[in-house]
Image (cartoon, rainbow, N blue to C red; front, side, top):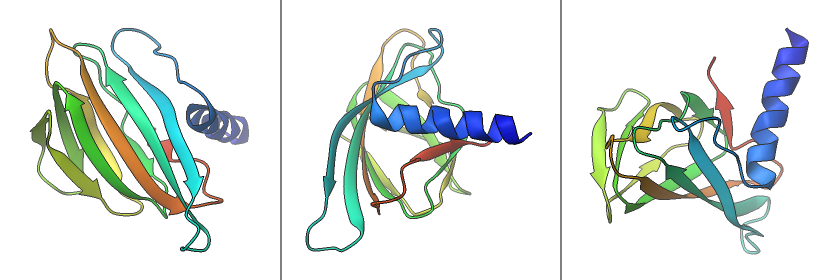
Length: 137
């Protein structure tokens, strides 16, 4: 059990440090784009990642970092999302939403089976909080 927890944490850390790889065509690809300490907010950093979804692809249900406030912006396509107890909603290119710290993201997927989709996620997070997401399973 401890090895599984360590492995899960390591995989989450790798997703933050370098480009993630898609396991198959049903997965997302996460690419880090920006990371910077916020100089006027001690202990906080801004981290930006780009999430690409192949047609029909989805993220595994996950929890976000306990400190992370997130702004998500759909760059292209349509993203179906459900956060915490909120409604499942489809966001189109140009639309956005926010997520509170420690949010549970039970649904995050490309709403289309035929077209790719992309979103930009901007995290304001404790600088020492390196795992931005943790799988729920």
